Picture 1: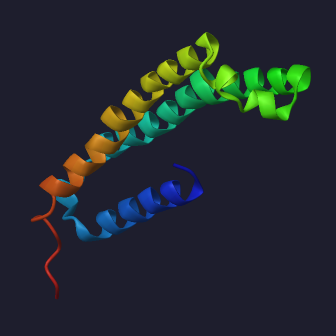
Picture 2 (picture 1 turned 180 degrees about the vertical axis):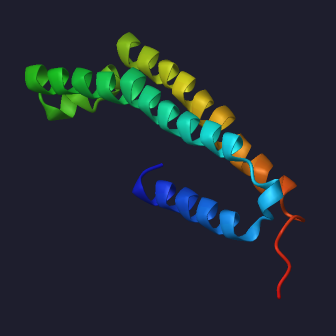
Length: 116
């Protein structure tokens, strides 16, 4: 998920807003999805990517670049804990962000504007 993922979701929301009948639109569902996607990404960064990156940076400075990429570092307890902490952000992202969008799109499939 990055620039292109966010752009794809924005394009999906834009197109859905134009094609789904107004009475079937749900701002609250899209709001929950928006905040869950962003909070999930923030949690992934704060609980895994940033701490693991700092840990690898310190290992790289102390022992060299190749050691920081070695299995000794990747399999270390600290690194493994941060990998498992990422699951928190992943769950917020998927359950609160992706599933509501999928639910919205599937349930509105037959509520599209009729061609004029």
